[in-house]
Length: 119
Image 1 (cartoon, rainbow, N blue to C red):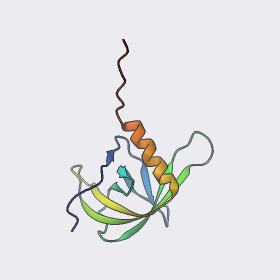
Image 2 (cartoon, rainbow, N blue to C red):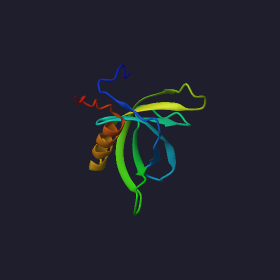
Image 3 (cartoon, rainbow, N blue to C red):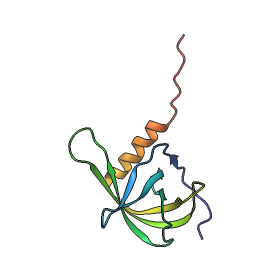
Image 4 (spheres, helix red, strand yellow):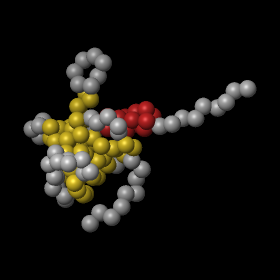
């Protein structure tokens, strides 16, 4: 059984929808991300130990949506504090290069960068 997280994760206050990569049906929302994993918030419990093909559909200013394809293994799943919601932790098995760009962009956006004081 999975006992602890070794990778820092970045919480997302606004969720991005995640889709089943095979049939494009909604599967949940992105809860947090790291270079090697993610947490998914779903209305249904997900099977621990199973591999999932996932698709993140990102909005863009112009043109078609950007799709980020992932293959991930579900390490754990438990009921969320919100009724009828489940949290599931995934380890990435395969990810398109755009996933790393997304993680870095989210880290920059949600990080605090102190400004030096000027005299």
